[in-house]
Amino acid sequence: MKPKSHNPDQSPQYGMTAVKKLPEITIFFWIIKLLTTGMGETTSDYLVHQMDPIFAVALGGIGLVVALLIQFSVRRYIPWVYWLAIGMVAIFGTMAADAIHVGLGISYPLSTAGFSVILGIIFAVWYVSEKTLSIDHIYTSRREVFYWTTVIATFALGTAAGDMTASTLGLGYFTSGLLFAGLFALPAIAYWRSGLNEVGAFWLAYILTRPLGASFADWIGRSPDLGGVGFGTGRISLVLAILIAGFVAYLTYSSKGRKIAGATTTKSK
Image (cartoon, rainbow, N blue to C red; front, side):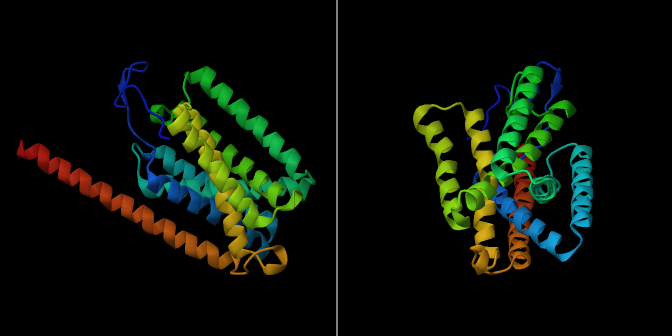
């Protein structure tokens, strides 16, 4: 489900060499994405129960702004920079969606519908402006802004949708996780078997990773009286953070290894 570009190294519209600032869509991308969704859910829950909720949300917002500033300032894709930004989006996106429900009293079905409309508007404006929604075409600052705005909206939508199935519909965390696992597989199956547009398949799967990862993280971390295993949100956040760091470190050093090998091959010719 990797969105392809017709010419990934050159932008005819802007007459410039494309500088890649986003990761390749591989199995590692989906694994880390799922881990960050779970980590964002449990970290948000842990922080808002360990400190003043307003302070926790403010802290999450500051962390998100700092992470995005770093991401926008770099000239190429750097694994730890990109995934730090994704992690902070996961944490703050969860806080924002929960704040709308708890603070403003808006129901999960209503917030799910509202975030769906917001995401649809973002996609529409992005497409009308840039004529593509492919992440392989992110080589201008404006497109990068569209991309990160979309990512934030998908996390908020996924948070509301996951909470809606678990709480409002009464499915619980584990059953919700199974539901979203099945839904997550559908875009891949439709792409491989029915020719679903690859960009559409990617974004459908991307949206569904949020409630999928968060549902299972909640099931493991929440207490039994809330329908969980009782491992603890703080503990599951730590475990997930370690796993994310391990995968990101692997991507970082394996990428360096490929560059060194490529440089050696070039010089030997």
